[in-house]
Length: 444
Image 1 (cartoon, rainbow, N blue to C red):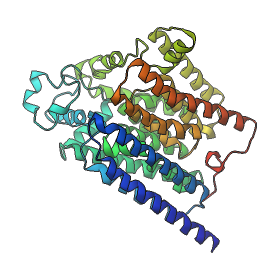
Image 2 (cartoon, helix red, strand yellow):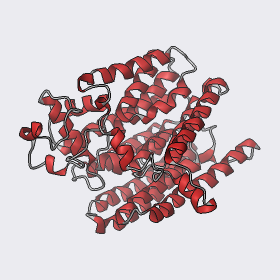
Image 3 (cartoon, rainbow, N blue to C red):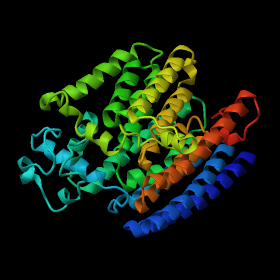
Image 4 (cartoon, one colour):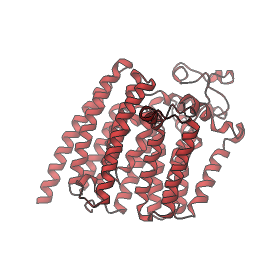
């Protein structure tokens, strides 16, 4: 009876928190334009507080199928509540629909920019006018993303249907996370860490960002690794990379079984060969131009460089910083491969993903979404903070000068770094942590 009482209490609390958050999702749809971003951010941060409280409740509660069903039901309700609204935070989804339409016309999506006269017959009044960078940028999205765009638009060339596709991939993520938690003998209700996070809900159900596809494949790769499927792990991690490129940094976490490497490499090569008719360089689309636009080569993108300059007057060329980052990531990867334990692959993947995100300091919030996945398995306060604080990047709507970006990034990264250091030393010296931060979660 005691367990039944605890489950009922947990259910009531989650239903109340979920109900309030659901109302806030509908309220957030009232934001529009630059003038509405402050209101939206207030809504998102209140939802974040609710999410953290729900996470605390779920971690403390005993494992329960009823709790898992409540988590999933509200996760779906949150997404459906904003699915049919037009995108507010980003217009990238219009390029997705356009790329699918171009492929349906039998044209390689990497061949022409949207404004090219060769594509004039494909233009309309709904999608084409809202495509960003249509006058100069080729598509930047890798081959597996392009395949999804094509298949989706063969059903409907609408923004709503493209967002629905991203939510279908999120359901795949839900399934993979629940399966993996079961194999790890951890409570399946920890799915809430991902499923209720406001960042992923707004970015995927609201904006339809393609990262949802990549995260689904990452989750499948982690599940395949746990099931000792080398073919599955290599193939799905390659698919994740062929959606957003950055998941390739997770490879050291799974390459302790070396048969995965040829599958990973072969799949990536095959993906690009499918579109190679435009030439070896052009198949990467506007990626080189995007690095210049974001100031990667000049170093404007990187918070660590700005911090070093502010504190010490130290200037390092952007290309030199990129080389340092590659060396650091290589060192982490080698340590994982040579020294790390196989059973710690989830922790290793989280470290690789977090290091990549922090070192490159993305300008946009959706680049933090993949970190949320790891909270289901490696709940760390520093990652909770980092993913929620990334919502501050919406403030760039109000200004993104170097000084403004320095303030925003300082609020995101410095507290996260401090929390991470405290976490490291507390674990190193075996200081007992709160339940939400421990890995020894209750068994199913």
